[in-house]
Image 1 (cartoon, rainbow over the protein chains, first blue to last red):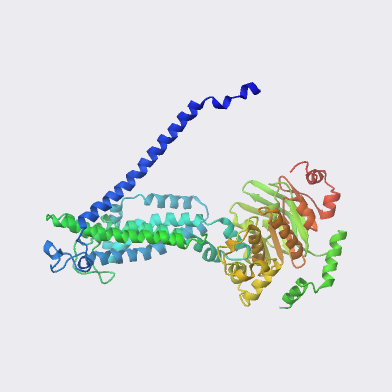
Image 2 (cartoon, rainbow over the protein chains, first blue to last red):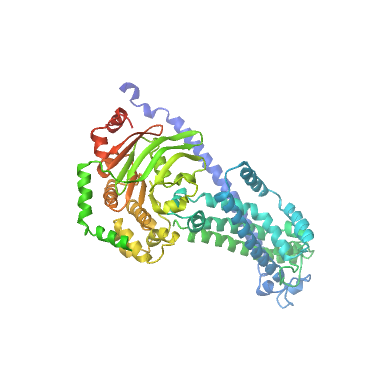
Length: 302
Length: 283
């Protein structure tokens, strides 16, 4: 026995060394994959910032767009992204209201009330599939239903409803996950002291799931604010000179205006488009930061 | 109000009659002819196709500690959860037979499980306080039941009865999650007794705790039996022997092998399998 084990642990070291080498190679590959994403993002941001340098000004934020470059320059009459900026903010605010009610409502029903059945599995599978449908298809749907059938025209509300359809599946799925993450022991604790189902959901389940629901919703809204295809189908204007002032007014949105500028022949418009992208990205990053803040701040476990 | 005052009095030890009566009973271990508060008749529970409880007949006496023991998977927790209909929350669970609470079958159609759970509180295996303040944790049951007058006093009384008030008195607004495991479990006991139920069900309340916290919970259980009927599931036989008046031994497959005074079960069990289990031949 002892002669067999003596020194046996110093044998086979090469094998261990080789396996360790594989491990290091694996780490290198994973690290490189991480770098690709980070480098791409940094390069994009650097390029946009460089292109837009000097073009983002107070006037840019507060004036309607113009086809003439000189209006964008200091001392010009003033031109910018104002109607599209307001349009985008209104659009996303409306979409937020619709998605929170519909998305969270559907998620609560599916997760807390609906009994396990084939119908429920079927509905859930379809919701998950809808999350993968290209946004242009939602645009066509919005055009057919809201613009034509409901006679809403190329209006702000038609755009918001279309974007709602687009992100609703993602909001439902992420809200369901947040609800599912609430430990059963918490529900049982509430039932144990004689709470009704409604009280359990209102007092225990929703507060606990809310940070997750908010995070999922805000991240979906950040996706919606950058969408171009669906609102293009619904009939958003590429350049509008007044900001929308009601649910049924025509509207523009930042991605539309940016796209319009990028197609103009003058070289300066590339810088102006970049300036528009900076404004869009700033709003987007602010929204994502809010999502992270909510997740960290209102997590009841911390 | 009157019952509250009586309880406060007895908690302060100003009710010598009852205390001695109860103590005498426990020492002698003689069976008492008394009205059972909970009675099961041929109670079976199924999880889908699987039968977890096989026609249980049992009478649980008032203001005593009744322990349910047995190897894992013997159905003791299932029986406990069928008393306050927590099994209703499991989709595939199905109950046959009757379970009487004060002579009323709780599985009758006209019984609202929520109303039942307001009479029969529950403490779970793992401490499960809400991510709320200590005060709000204890007040939760009062609030959902609409007993929210004089919440302050009721919360303090519950905390005191759960032997936790001294440790948390000056930080009632801190999160219940900041307490130690044993304190959390006593907080959950306070939460269960605050709305003043008649029965407290405990599902292995000390199994996740260290020995010191365990013995605190055990003392508390004995104390609570002065006011409440306590039914406690435990996998710890010594614990059952220490704190209970009656013991039910369940065996694998969901059979109730023996149910009697705790002293009898541990000193002179009638059933050979029960004796084997008690003496540690299996389990």
